[in-house]
Amino acid sequence: MSVLFATICVIFATLLKYYTMKSFSYSFVLLFVSFFSFAQKHDFVPPVKIPLILNGNFGELRPNHFHGGIDIKTNGTTGIPIYSIADGYVSRISVSSSGYGNALYVTHTSGYTSVYAHLEKFSPVIAEWVKDQQYSKEEFEVNLFPGWGRFSVKKGEEIARSGNSGSSGGPHLHFEIRETDSEHPTNPLSYGFKINDTSKPVASNLYVYPVSEKSHVQKSFKKQRFELVYFNGAYRPKGQVSISGWNKLGFGIDAVDYLDGNWSKCGIFKMELHVDSLLINSFEMDELDFGKMRFINSHIDYDEFMRSGKKIHKTFIDPGNKLGIYKKTKNRGVFDFDDGKKHEVLIVISDIAGNSSKIIFNINSTEEVPVPQDVYTKLFEYDSENSFENDEVELDIPEGALFTNLKFNYKKTPSIANTYSNIHKLQDKYTPLYKSFDVKVKPVSLPERLQDKALLAVVDLSSGSFSSIGGEYSFGWVRASTRAFGNVCVVVDTVAPSITPLSIKEKKTLMEPGQIRFKIKDKLSGIKSYAGFVDDKWVLFELDDKSSVIKYKFDEHIAKGKQHKIKLSVEDHKQNINVYEASFYY
Image 1 (spheres, rainbow, N blue to C red):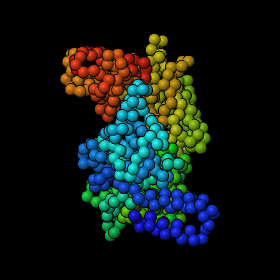
Image 2 (image 1 turned 45 degrees about the vertical axis):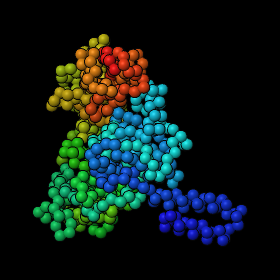
Image 3 (image 1 turned 90 degrees about the vertical axis):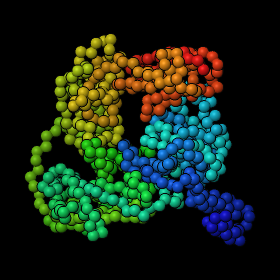
Image 4 (image 1 turned 30 degrees about the vertical axis):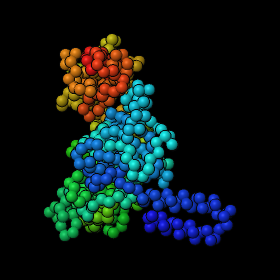
């Protein structure tokens, strides 16, 4: 019995002295549930029995989202046993070719749900039930909710094996602990799992941003980068650079954290910004909201990320940023350096183990300089609907799509090969959006026979390559919804997806025992669906998006010792279909 649980028992015994059994019964139940839940919250066992070595932590900056859990290394292999961290029941099972891949969700009586993702396989009883559901639905990708009582599990019970499924970049276990009611992921390292960490976060670059029209840094109206070096107990601008600025400024930090004996770059847990010893802003990666994950593109310097790949924590908050990670803030983390004085700035970055580093520098408030004239097409305000249109293009941006006011720019250039419209430069790809906006483009010289094959795409003018937005032809326009600006044009997709057999030679000889594999790809609109049949009966082909490979592992649905016919049909989003047929002996 744990010390905590023993303490709870003593508390209950004491309470019994002061209540009659009649009046105590209801109170006892409430108190017991409350205290037991608290005890269980801090009494989880690890999900693996190997040392907990991480290659990703909670709140780490990822493309379009914060990392909602921790990534536990599995020695570079798959098949490591995965255990339930506490008593509970399997409340959700997800199978996907991307994202979390094979994932299990276990709901616990403590008010928390644990999540285990990128799995290789489920425990046999769960796997059998999932497969039955897949065959019943004739779908590989399923999202199942077994309900209470179907799959009850005990603390420490094996529920799955680790893998590399979904969008995993290598074998590991993605593990989360969510609040069951809100479904908010919480930081798993706050629950007592043993992780060796005595290493301080490391900072490499400081960014200073002009925030207002009049603001400048080093007499420039663009952000400035300063390389940091560690000196005298803190990170400071290299060469003791004197930073001058005027009016409202914000800051950004290029920083990562390392765990002991591990070179994987992890994210920082906490940041505090002080100017002249006054706390201006802080954030903490203790709890996240899946519904607000894309606000990460406001939290980071999105322009810098798109250009260089650097993930910069901004210490100031855009007016349209609604993240809940900010704990204490003054003027949204923006400070007005307009008094002609020198100001000391201190930024403290910490990990969840309490290791911290300081970034120290001065801002010399100088004087106002003439503001250059800014040329743009139209001002879009972040807190209202915005639109732009001419004879060839229209866009409607909903309120809340922008993080801050935008000086929108538009430019039209002539069409290029394989396009059916002019090229419409809508702002640029370096401007982030939270919500999708509607856009429609007037096609040029689009034959009627190709209207149902038309879609919108973003073109890279340097390479001539296209990235599909999607959309449909309607009443003389091609319409779509997108979450990114760029060079938009009309293209058509008349090419069916490709099917490359990996297991059958000359459509008659099986080359791999026990399975059939294909590689399927589509060059433009993307694969919408696929279906495989053996002897005219649907069979379970599993798709791995990373490799574009689908495979059918022979099961009870195929008889041994006879000749079989296989048929694979693959369709893209423009109704182009490719069908592969062959025969083989098994």
